Image 1 (cartoon, rainbow, N blue to C red):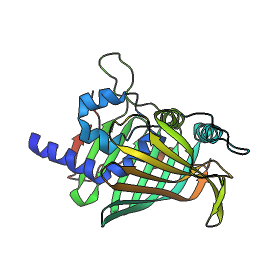
Image 2 (cartoon, rainbow, N blue to C red):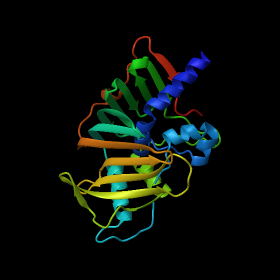
Image 3 (spheres, rainbow, N blue to C red):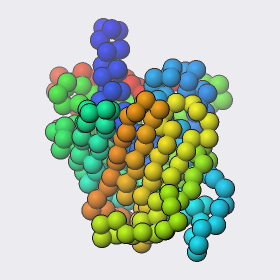
Length: 268
């Protein structure tokens, strides 16, 4: 049974790790330090889930500065009450490409739901206290408590707001505009584009490029690259904010005969 649980945890990590990168940055930023993560979970887990997070120098750039844009983004997400969008994820290593897509919902505090159309039937749901990861093909459910505390100092492992996660993001990376033309038109929309580079090499994504909509300061796209050639692209479309979403949307009903793995991401 222990071997089965171990295998299930490994599969869940491999299946959803690239997606959970953005999930944790925006919605469930960890209070664990990078060193504690390495000591506790080993470098492979850290590389998959916690790609190092991102404040930088106040370099002026025309009428805008990277630091000003970062503050606007943090403020936007901190004040966000609810959110609905379509998400698209592509991971590429060499010639191998994997894609995922679906619809996501978010509501303060810590409530979210990701319904996957590809792979069909997969779900990630949280009511703010418990995070459920369902992989339909395996009929397996990961149940992750979000109320765990670190034994050493009784501080919560997870925080409830997206603002603090983005603040850590901008603190752990150097960042600047990718070129002097800011904002610039991509498709039919204007974006500020920030290049982020990890301050200290601790694994995970060494570089991240953020595409921030000028009219809303929402992150519409993120492209992340690690030192081993893996590129993950995550984009959000048809975004609607501060809409009415019923709390019932964030309840998860365990399918019959599903295999349950307790705390597959983090334990005490």
